Length: 329
View 1 (cartoon, rainbow, N blue to C red):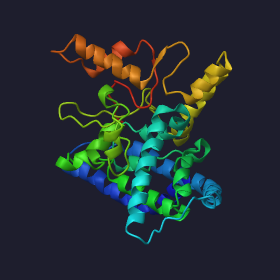
View 2: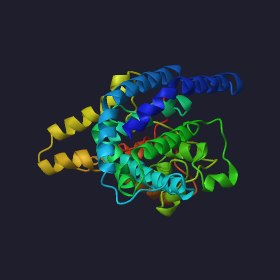
View 3: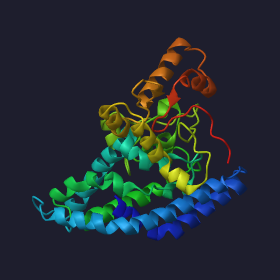
């Protein structure tokens, strides 16, 4: 919801400071390199998102305020059960919003920005696309208005939900035991950002993974299968405008060269990686290829590069998948 994300950017300096502390820990404690240019690109994108949010927040706030007048009843947020129901409602609709962002290219065009870093660290948490309002992603929360939750309550709940997710973008926190089965943790979110075939399109929850478990999209991180991050066609660019608009440009190219109106619409709204001639691979096809390869060689798992070689006969383009290891920036 763009309105919330604009509000969230008010705390950007604090988030940047925490991200800088994480960078220091990676450099001094873990003795590892840090992707400074990638992190600075995230800062630039976050500032741009803040500016774009200023231009659209009023429109969305006005829409939500108008729709609020058509509610069936009003939930008493001073009661103990009001905030509890709102939390559950936010989690439910956030899950489906987030899942749709991965399964529909129209929404993925904006969300791909967040998945573009080839490393996972706290600076990536505020790498948010500028075109969320254009996609209409905020409309996923309209049912909560009709069910009696005010725009202000929904906005505050979403801000808290997004703030919770900030700490999930790190490799410094290990698995947290039984909490992994309930909460969205850094481990669970690493899986969400991973490009390993078996990790694709998983763990969509905000604060919890309850709806992932209910709807079959939960995948646990495996100690013997380290997460790798990025996109099918890695950006290999730290230009904020390239990162923000690349997928939209590719959609336009596909639509412009489509031979039928049906194909044009499918390039916009079907899964990332769909193509009229099956020359590309969606996430589902990539996972199916990986499963088939494992069945053929059960005693000797194929390497990531072998997976890439077998899958790269088509033009790999999916919501979060490449088998090539991320390049060091």
